[in-house]
Image (cartoon, rainbow, N blue to C red; front, side, top):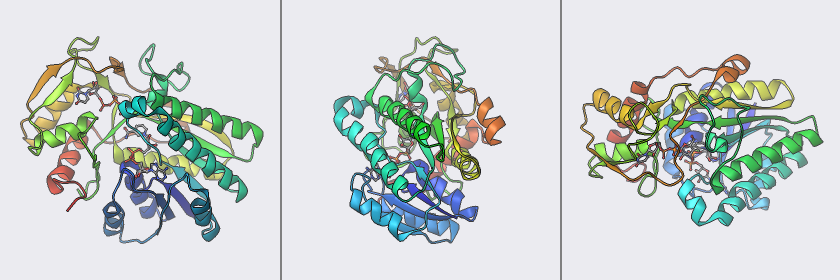
Length: 337
Ligand code: NAD
Ligand code: UFG
């Protein structure tokens, strides 16, 4: 059984490749290294002791992508490749729409041509926009408030239309909440190129001494301590969710959407405290203004994934903090030498 993983050198993709290889799947990885490094692929082999095919290709390059399909007997696709920085998407929306939406259209056209109709897509909790209630269920109202989130919703809609046009497709739309943590080996993890936008990589860089303190965006949110609440999920739990979704798409046809989170919300201060406790690293912080577009709280109702996929996150906040720090400590410069 051979699975094409687009964006497999990235943060969530690399962790999922490990779980796939450990479970006995063959994988073919496609990535253009726009937001990742070849070293991540080497480490996947180091951890699993298994080799796999890799194509350095852009999804927008139809000829290059078609070569991947003509040279391999692919059974299903897990599609991670995409741009993901919310703020950047506001500055360069056309680039985001083109990369994420057009990239997915090209991928689906080629899949259709090669009669491969099993697909798992990386969507995001961002499609819920400002949730009217928490925990959010899959049928909560949708309304992303930035171009990045809209690319995800548009792709979900395209994939729904694709299924309506041809019921032989089997598609799983996975809405991730806030993935953090790293592989327990400490060999792969999140490696942001620039100043981190997201909280955990920022905390990591404070812990390692690259940044002075965490700037907490707002202290007057409607939450238990005034700081923003999110559903942080260990990236390895998230990766395992893909294997459950894969079993489902391989065995059936249809389209379905699942929240992948823990169902528990933690605040910025909860996360910092937990990180300090488990790692014994002091994390200085200060409060600044709210970040535009942030919401007070967002966490998942995971009942559907629990019941239909038989998946539940197993790792807790301490595991997430411990593994994040282990990755950072072992790789102070990420994948760079
Ligand atoms: P990432 O940036 O680490 O990985 C994405 C990978 O896709 C990168 O290796 C990048 O080089 C590659 N890529 C991007 N555009 C490409 C293209 N046109 N052709 C080929 N490769 C391309 O991001 P991640 O955190 O691993 O996220 C994976 C997916 O999950 C993304 O689609 C993202 O939008 C989605 N997601 C991420 C989060 C999160 O917080 N990390 C939350 C919700 C959803
Ligand atoms: N935060 C800070 N300081 C920072 C960074 C973040 O206080 O330096 C706060 C934010 O205000 C928020 C929380 O930490 O309350 C989490 O922020 P992140 O940027 O880590 O995550 P977001 O929830 O804003 O967004 C992330 C991804 C999105 C994805 C979403 C899914 O960036 O792409 O999770 O829920 F869609």
